[in-house]
Image (cartoon, rainbow, N blue to C red; front, side, top):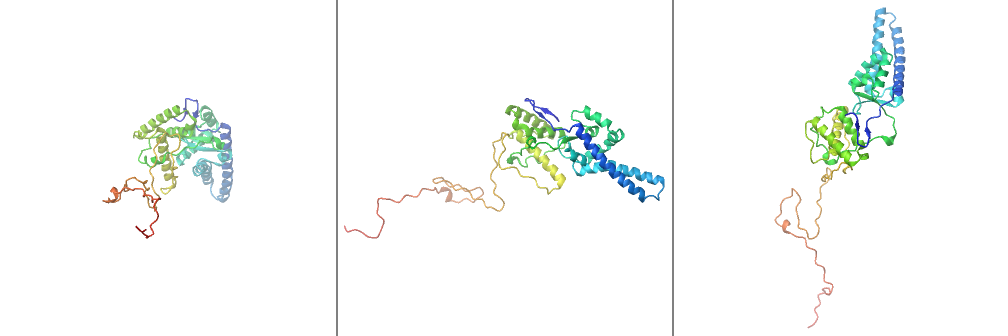
Length: 328
């Protein structure tokens, strides 16, 4: 489910990079790695001139593997998929679900890249990119990654709306390990484009995605939550877990907005919770209404029976009392 097409022929997918831009980025990366290899190799040869030929050969092979194989792997891991060549061309390596890559993704791409780029002069990589629907080479296929365009107009970028605040933390106990990356990508693309779809089409797609997600998590989708809100809440839970895993347990997670975003179909509002340290003052009932004590307050035998009555107006036709009594 890495690619969905709606009834309005709206394709939900990432913007993969073209082959020319990818080839230019690879050439720039290889040029930088080759220059670094020549500089380091020259310095090592001068420093180890006293060693025998076998030792110098072993050092040359070690430097080749370290700089031309380990260097790109380290750069892509530390930069989250943006090497020097990709940064210059406006490209980035991401996972199939659109998230940042990790060390294992960069390792698989780098090891397979030695065969399909260095040993075959890029012929295998070019053929694989031309055959693939999204321009992926063999390293991307085995690593589960995709090279996408990062420099795109701001007006075309999609924004994933946050879930309603009353769903915060409700799905913290779900097991998300069995959800594939393709399903996460489909959910994220739907949430960014659901406002552009027909309401019936958007509702049916949300129900289908919510059913697939519930089947992968092993827990049924709640009946009191709209499908789109359920998808947004679970996606936010996954993003929160990724943030805690990447930045530690103390990573701050942005709080949802105070109002329910439009498009989810929900009409439930969150109860008022006063801020920490601020005492809660119950609202004053209107005049004439019976007094109801707040929740948790002690019962008073008099207060519940007291009814607030409006104050009697002062008579306007009687003179004010002065203490003088007229004669009979």
